[in-house]
Length: 566
Image (tube, rainbow, N blue to C red; front, side, top):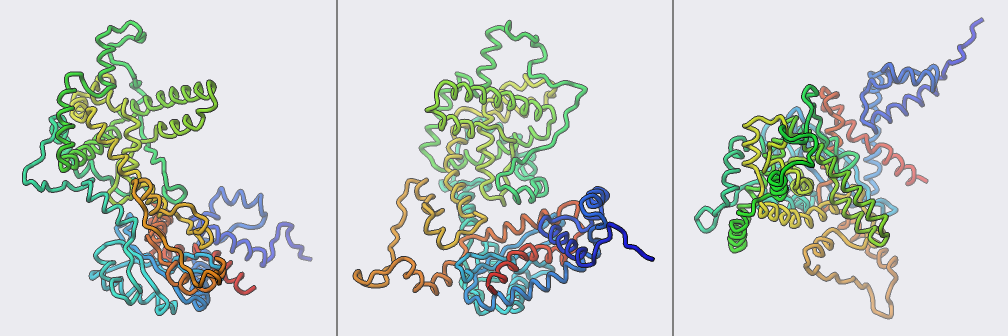
């Protein structure tokens, strides 16, 4: 007589576990075969004896089924919505393949702001603007929402702009965050040298002219890094990535923080050597003070020369950071010095906290500003990356001055590297300009962060919010924000409560408050897509990538439908 095994599992239970495993693969962007790996098999044998997890072919088959179920659910949900806003953007992955993302935004019956990815498809062939137009129209017709579209928010790319400038997809909104980034980049000449209106080349300081010799040799390589080196997956969990850099140090030759000829006991070093170190840390010699004052006077008298100075300093900074990152010896020295200064700073903060408790808030702020984080190079396509680069670089001021003014303190560098470092040295005026540039960029960094919030506010939360992004920008720039007039729907004797006014204005709110000021929703989808199609999954088919991206909202939409039916 047959007796079933003690660890036998029913068909219903196995189906339930398979569905949970597939949902885990979609939500966590795991490989289809993860549940059949040896380590996972060992865990499952202990956690759920008799269950081996879904095979990759089972995952692929069920993925397509879930995708079409999700599309049907989208049609049912959208059939009850009258006003929908879109955002769209184009992305190029590590394999140089272009994709378009389409997101929809609307208010549900409870006035919750809902954002969904409704389209993610590969672009092929030429005449991109025509293909973009046809694809957007196709997706809207498939979901039966073409007549419900009120606006579409995109960047200023020529193709996407040409495809959406007509009124077929509602009014076109130019992404505010992109516009801010373009305004700052073009206005300050962060990436492109501005023309001198006076017809003469601005006078540049001698030190900057020397630095340009080394910068111009590898300008293209120094000013930009391959997008793959930054890693799109860094921005999925936290917008402010540490951008850590892996490096290998040759252990056969220990890194010393002293000069080769300096004895282990530095207490006996002569006064000349101590003066040399102090001058290196300060960033300039005393004889250069008059030249710097003259340079500053010239800069303040001619705004165009300030922009020219900013352009040169940024190129110099990118070249120096690249040089530090390319040299194992130099990179290790900078890291070790930063670690030592961080420890000294933390000890100072602890001593201040022990002495007084009234200054605890101030010391916390100082500790945050003085934290040594890995140096990064900005990217033209990354919002606020120039501000982040300067914010981190300025903290390294003392270390940079020592390395560039007296590179002999770093043991192991050859003569060529030392000469390059000397040419990339900074004066007091240079540091003042970098600090001023950082302060100018900060308000735009702050407002972009506010505009790029991932969790969209509901109408009720927007009323409770103290400051909007634009209001905060006006405050940071010491400007008056435009006055806002409250709408009154009746006479003073028949004044209505806020809830009654909202009830009357529901149609207007649903029609216009859904319009997105930025295309951040599509940008965030691309960051996730970069992680989904990471190096270990580079062979992922475009169709599978589309299904995975759209199904990330599967549970959100399922929950909304269940609540609607209750």
